Amino acid sequence: MDHIYKTIKKDKQIWKFCFYGLLKNLRFFEPYLLIYLMNLGLNLFKIGILFSVREIFIYVFEVPSGIFADHYGKKKELMICFTFYMISFVFFFLGINFYVLIIAMVFYGLGEAFRSGTHKSMIYSYLEQKDWFQYKAFVYGRTRSFSLIGSSISAFISIIFILNLPEVKWVFLLCIIPYILDFLLILSYPDRLDERRKGSLNLKEFFKTCCYQLKRIFASRKLTKILLSSSLYESIFKSIKDYIQPILEMTILAVSVVELQSFAPDKKIIIYLGIVYGVFNILSSFVSRNVYKLNKVADSSKLMVVLFDVMGVLSVILFVAIKNSYTLIIIVTFLILYVLKAARRPLVVDVYGDYMKKDERATVLSVDSQLRSLFTVVFAPLFGFIADQYSLSILFLFIGILIIIINRFLDISNIKSSTIDIQCQK
Image (cartoon, rainbow, N blue to C red; front, side, top):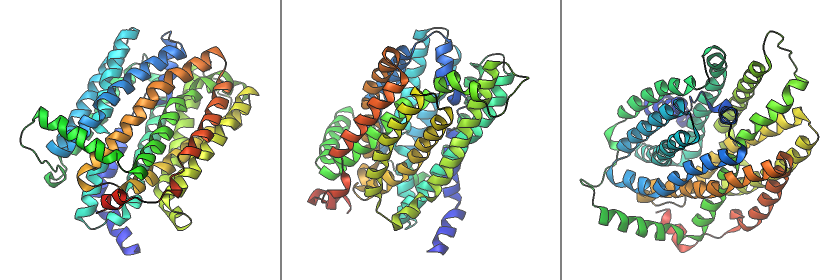
């Protein structure tokens, strides 16, 4: 088995999968997005609306994009997605008002919809071709770790960019460079991973296939619960992950471990945020690469349930820490949340692999992302409203209780596989 792991690590296409994720995550604006939007005069509720716009477009186009990838080519779809991303970055750069930012979010949402699930489906196909499918948790954890390394590099480099550029908005244009490189990388993928099955686009057949595959997917009780568990976890995390930015802005300077005397307060925030995000992603990368080893203790479905409960407990801890301005506890708790997120995703992909039919992988993973978007459409403005009307501490108390309740209904570790589930493995 050690020999196979070494062979996988040396494989040229696996390295391409890894660098795809690294380049994709060079989003230099990420550590500062919420603060950037707040500095434009937007409150948390309006920012929640922007995120909802993005998620609505992901929701609408997720399943069609997945079926498009399954039927008309995955390489083509990924190249389209990076085109949408680059257009969105231009509009973020031009973001002079709320409505221009909405347009930016529309194109960003289209990019997310056309990307999500498609690349994972290509990884599944390649592993089958190489007879490595049983090592999917190891491979995805490895590729995911490179994505997080990309996020870490992005966070550290962004400090230099933000401190030296005339305005924060210029980082959006800089993001176009790695996305062009990723576009060219996808173009170099072997054609056998494209798996195009149709020569022309027939809308009637396309939507008929949509309905059929969705019905088949949700006929599986196990797969439905996995979808809900995955998408709810991801949507809650997605809706709260950037709240560390205003929290740190309010508290970190008061307890700075290293006093940066030569920098103004706003520059200190930039430096600290970049460092925090960089460290978060370095540790997340390590965890993602090694999480497959936990399967020696418990299977992936049980670990998914445990990590969801832990997220709820950590949210309650954040309630106490924010209420009492325990900055170090806030940072450590957010760090653990990021690490758990990195650990959980390879487990989810591993569980999905056992319950999906070969010809519906991109569709299932798109349904996952679509449900995530649907929940985020609700959670983003709701969480923003609670934070504005009450406080960030009350928000995290609400989230903690919500997670504990939800997870009681989504205990996927105790569900017996149905006949349909077993068929999905064939």
